[in-house]
Image (cartoon, rainbow, N blue to C red; front, side):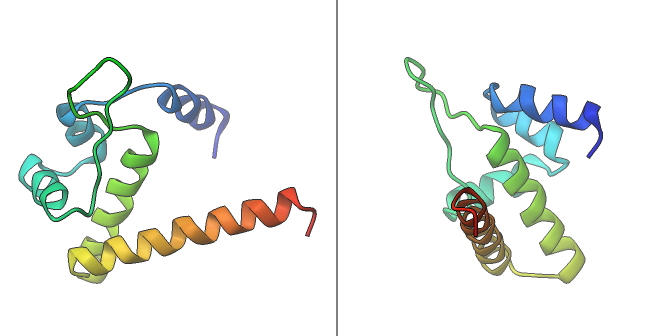
Length: 102
């Protein structure tokens, strides 16, 4: 990833996105996103003192990855979400091993 890409990621980590922002930045359409939210494949967050659903950078990465798996491998939404769950879990385990020096 380029230095510019890293700075964008750092900025996104501190931002909350609304539904329209997530649709625009992820490249999916609103019905796709609403369907995945309704199925429980995506979760909304709300920062303190705010009741509107919001999304963070991790949610943006998740939406992009699920959409990519569905498109490239013709995966059903539940399977794509499961693959992303497993990828996220594997990344967390690898990070933990690195922290432990293993």
